[in-house]
Image (cartoon, rainbow, N blue to C red):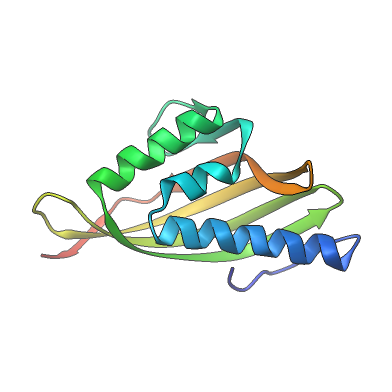
Amino acid sequence: MTNPHRSHSNSASSQAGFETALQEFDDALRDRRSQDIMDLFAEDCKALIHHQDTIVGRDAVGEAFRRYFDVFPTSAYAPDYDVVDVVGDRAYVLGSFQETLRPSSSGPLTRVFGRVVLFWSRIEGKWLVTRLLTARSSPEQIGE
């Protein structure tokens, strides 16, 4: 997690636990670990990913990430969070990201810039994503 603009929490332990979960999410995405990403989503989650139908449910989100990582197995992923807010058992994150993608088949590297909104809930003591919204700018090719 980089550069939170503001962070509110009613306890230091809530904030620390949430920051750990957010770092786990970032690491799993950067390392293309679809099972670990899936484990960070609530059972009834929804993902609204740029140019896709709404993805509903933890298993469907995991499958969507698995398919994506099959097409783009290597990537550099760098999030920059503008707002991180934790209140009780709820948290939200607003930010931007940059990805550099290398297709599994031949093709050029592609740099993608985007925005992300994450809504989290602490469910049975574990921070889980309940909503994921992303939007991407047009990809920019950067070479072979």
